[in-house]
Length: 229
Length: 229
Image 1: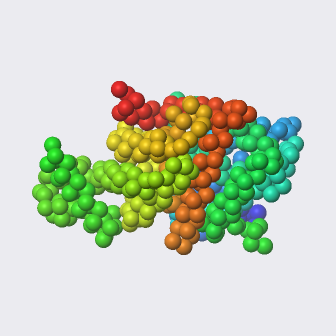
Image 2: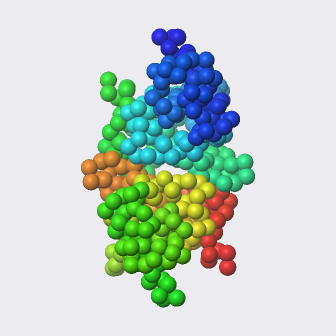
């Protein structure tokens, strides 16, 4: 099992290296197998094709994000600071995967595709991201509405998706706008979440939570592993 | 000039009919020219290819949206109600163009593509949408922060883009979630915009406006025709 995971990770790494060098389209499964030091048949045992490898990138990204966020938020107790740190790590990782960003975007945006972030097939990376979000909230000094607090991991994951889409669309030099946006967004979300416990704002919170519940109806596979248990 | 516009519109209509019957990929420029009753050369005089025709769809959509929204908001004075009505029309039009939605999505989402809603080439439909948004605001009984009010047409256009993306991703029966979301979103935005004049909320408004200004840096072609004057 551990060996299987190693081979799998080796193939993903080889694919990443080659695609970063040559681009997604110019990279063949044969070249990936050669670079990984496995047979072509073995590569196909793990991945049905290049598209399937993108799922491997998602897992790499979600795992790297979790490790680096844990590091980045150490000692930070304000939720806003923790959100900013987590989004900064996300942007950093987007930069690293920039050579395959177009391939990831066009496949990820396809509503029924296996690489859509809400799909059943994407449940592993999604659950990892949700776990990281849950840790962000759990480690924060935070007073807010209890129901909102419970929904925060999912809401923060949606924020992450929006930031990723914004990063892709950002044509400013060095994606400077995305970085400024993230540094604006973290503190603002922190304040909004904290102010949400004011009774006058309860209707807005309720509407948000209704909306979130509805999104699960729009994307039934979102439920993922843990929810299904 | 009027004749040119007619021919152009006839070709777009023919393309739409054929693509709705056969799908985007199975529709050739020759078939479009035949259906429109023009020569192939004439079709290519107006449109460089099928992708370019999508720009024609955008214009059709923006024009249809404007006409129907004017009708739908007649007599409505609350901004929330007006936003809801405008988004309901948008969803209705999305349904009508559903057969080519995938083609529009994959091309529209491409960051540097001519069919991206922020591109220079999309300025005509974009300006139409912005004009419709401006009318939504101008016709509303509304007290809010003056700077926010000035920014509302652009903010509402961004909301429209988000709703369109949400519609595409919505897998619920008859896109029921999108329709419920729109009916939640309109009133909520109406209330948020009205509450924005409370001095305690000024920092949030300021942050939003900074963010909007920054988005223009991220997408320099967004400025469009009017701004460039």
